[in-house]
Image 1 (cartoon, helix red, strand yellow):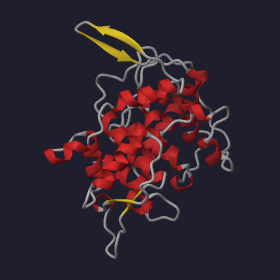
Image 2 (cartoon, helix red, strand yellow):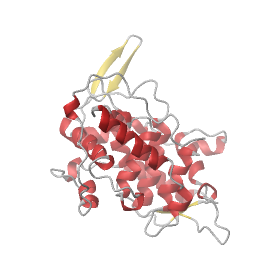
Image 3 (tube, rainbow, N blue to C red):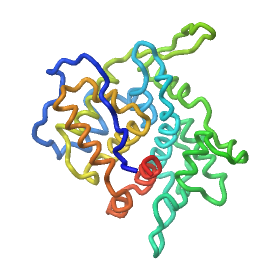
Image 4 (tube, rainbow, N blue to C red):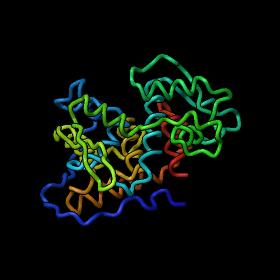
Length: 285
């Protein structure tokens, strides 16, 4: 299957052609710093990968994700595994002499020190209790509750979207409301801090336009993960929709280049994150 199949199809949205991010010289020296810490960011608005993906998927005024999006659940679980990998809590088992494929290698606990994030620590607890270890693909299924094995259902992380939304409420990005949908009431989380979401969208746009480096190994790992997992969660389109036509086409072209990479090859390069590439492989197999 072509990894770029079904990437995104532009929705019919009125756009001002002047809103697009114009391609200019690469600003490579400060990229890693800029993508981790944007100007004006504070500790209160520093978001995890899971929170960023959810924020991209939430409708600003309505405060909920699309009812037709059935990808975001597993995408958020992929974010959790990558967060644990980037924070040094998990790693892949050694590839061995015969170079086991990413999706056949087990996810190993490296450090069980709590992260301070409730969702991450709950996943970490499940990983710690599991013997023998499981693959990245299996963990995405277990944490999502999408497994045929009834013994593994206890690993499911429940109410993930609601819990992440509450985190964003605590950080002042969202608020909480009740809405009536004919037969039932639903808690929603409309956007209150437009600056945080606008900064997130611009950060993604810049990564594939003005700050594009044409080498995934030189991209900030968090930004690389955000692009992949936003695509896997079917919310990446929301970051590109405001662009003018030329920038939109260029952004999509560059995302396709990332999706078409040889993940096995990228995972053996120096200073890379094998967990990162294993999660990518699980969503594009």
